[in-house]
Length: 306
Length: 306
Image (cartoon, rainbow over all chains, first blue to last red; front, side, top):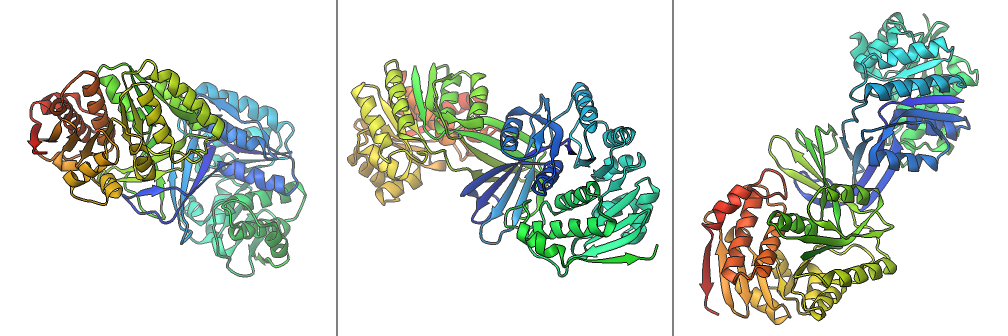
């Protein structure tokens, strides 16, 4: 079983309007709701790849109830921990004509120390049966900034490979607890290391404690800096579409490749192909399985000198 | 008891952001939720004026549950009829700097014929104890376009004075059923009659079936065309602020004045003062009771020749 953690889950709402005009009134033509937050997105892709997947994190309030009801219809097993606060909503307002999206993200709920303790206990229990764990996304208010560092240490003690995908201070603290894998994008990596040169920055991130760093570089594909070597994987051509969820699909690719025992070129190929197939899919955060299969054969992997 | 009907209730959500920028991502600084829809707004003002008030209409789904939970903390008595569909949400995105508002309104839930029948039965029971009834706002999908006409006839049969505040075809059909009072704004009146000249248009609306027409004319105040005469009431000066809910406060003024036996100048004075005090209040749809008391003394009423 693969475990994904989403401490700041979200109910993702999409509104379709003809075109968003500031300070005007709009009738929404179409409303869609789905469970969101990075770890939930990762879990959906893992389940689609045929992996038994469990999601944990927090959910509460009316929006949390809707999220769990929607999650019940999907393959990942729901082990979310209830909280008194309400799960945040995110609203994506999509212009029907241009496809451009305006995003409104509510702040997360305040999580109490007792709720955090309940989560840590659940997490410990779930680690027991996990082949790998992914820690994904931002921290809701109330949690210690070192929350991910604590969860990384807990996974390492349980000997479960742990991937960390977050940003800012939680990433900086988390990386010092020596996770097996971090997956920053170019901006997150630059924020962490102060360098915009991916190779130099990835090496720096390894020195800070990450066993392996996989940097997602948009159209340039992904760069892995591991103890075994340095690889870069890129799609055959730039793909155009909606990049929402592409990073989460990449995490699912890396994690599934890890538990299936693929080597780094194999894991990167899968991550890049899934990421590109997500950009190509019409619905945000879904991936196009036909495009994925085709892309697998055309991703190019290059090994760099160490 | 005064009854208000809101067939298309809404959960009104307000997001405060620094400034809305199309196609950008925004962190929402502040989230507020309140029960909405015109009849619910009218009921809140009536209750604040000291009138026993009952609200009916439809509520359903998770948003309907939140609406009813919030309503439970307020004075109006909740007699909403449950439906399978979800109560619509409206989102007002307020720019913190300018105060300008961008509105996103979800479509209403689909109401089934059986749910409509259940409502009509509830409405009939509530009319029994009502001194007056207000029928407010748009119709959700699934209801017959003549729904308000049917509710007007039912009130007339029960000998309960009935005010209709809607627009478009539901207003056109409803007015033909001879309501005691309609309260169109200038646009609604022009749409109904084809005339932008308020006096001519109000007279036309009376010929179409309304016993009395009270037109709300923004800064020009309100014009009443009744069997007893023609009056216009205006605030002492144009008031600046947020006009959301000003029309609903005017309905509450007219309705409370009616059940208290005020004459037309008295009812109009109250409606104009409440409306102005709503524009002046910092929160949308609330009224400033100090401003209301002060305004009562300074509204000017003019009688027109018939």
